[in-house]
Amino acid sequence: MARARTTGTSGTTTGGGDRRGTGGGARAAAASAASDAGPGVPVSRGQVLRHRVRAQQLDRPGDDARRPDDADVLDLGVQDTGTGGAAWSLANRGVPVAADPERWPGELALAWTVRGAPHAYRRADLPGVEVALRPYSPADAAKRVYDASKPLHEAGIEVPDALAAVAREMRRIVAEPTIKGEMSTRLTAAMPAPYLRYCRPCDATHLYEMPFRLAALHAGLELEPGTSPPVLRPVPGWPPDHVADLSPAPASGAGAPGPAAVDRLDVVRAYLHHLGPATPHDVAGYLDATLADVTARWPSDVREVVVEGETRWVLEADADALLADAGTDPGGDDPVVRLLGPFDLYLQARDRALLVADPARQKDLWRTLGRPGAVLVDGEVLGTWRPKASGRRLTVAVDAWERWSPAVQRAVEAEQERLAAHRGLTLVRAGA
Image (cartoon, rainbow, N blue to C red):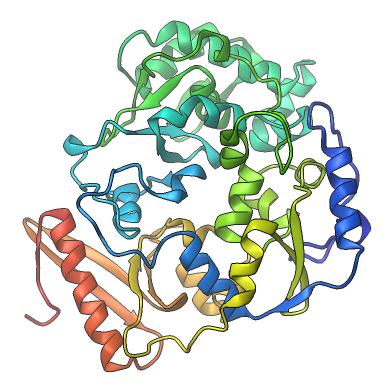
């Protein structure tokens, strides 16, 4: 991938950056050679969306015999924001995970990870996830913690060192399940001034929020499902040498040494698989990482394609499937319809204009507060939905963006019934 040619959705070119510990120089050169071999193959918007549906297994029917950790999206993490967010996302991919947190499967674990949000992963993968999510460089770490980086920098403290210091204290404090407020109080007493800020809403001084959240997994701590405020607890059997180790993860890619899990859990590769074709700008936006670091770690085994005039990349292993599917119009006789939760991975792609072209609809779908879910029909977002529970009854308000075919209407109604059953509620139709 030739760096001078790389553009993100903003149209800005990428520059160089700190590659310490990434091994990215050789990988970027290899990608550049592949890119310079010729222009990318044109790929339609429809092909991209159908490819993502397949890659994320959204077209997979439910199967009660399936293991609760049998979902490819768990490689990248399944965000657990909102009522049963992760459970419904997994159910939409054919995995039998109940909405009731009391029935949360032991094969899955929750942790604060990407952008400080709670995500579900395979429990067995947690140590590998922790390695994959280590910042790629000091500059990258500073970007991920937002405004917390300024006082640390002024005090001469590198952000990776600060995250390690917070992780050590968190590990010392949490010997048993500990509520977030208690953890915060004890952590504030233990950490010096550059780590702390005055919080006006709380009228109190405490640790900056992003270092608090991002350090938790580096301390070997997970979240108890269904707790509000959150409860942190030690991950059973956490490797002692992982605690407060913020050395960057090794770069992964085709032919790289090490276990296959290094590739599978690598955020850059996992994003390209589940949300590709994509650009370094897209991946950096998803991870809150620096563009230079993501570009330096860009995989060598990628193929260049052109989507609506923009050069993007797809993993070589996914390229043939992407290019082979000419697809059909959405809403045919047997449409794949899903009611996606507001923070479903499908909606986390950073190329929002590709998914929803209308700016007003984008603004509604991705609003900061009160975000609705999306009605997905064969890869196209064709409306939004909002649930409302009252006692044991559930109503689902649906806003169709266009006139739906009878097949789509029937499928949407069936999905409402499935949502109610998933939550253990009785569906009440609007007007009933």
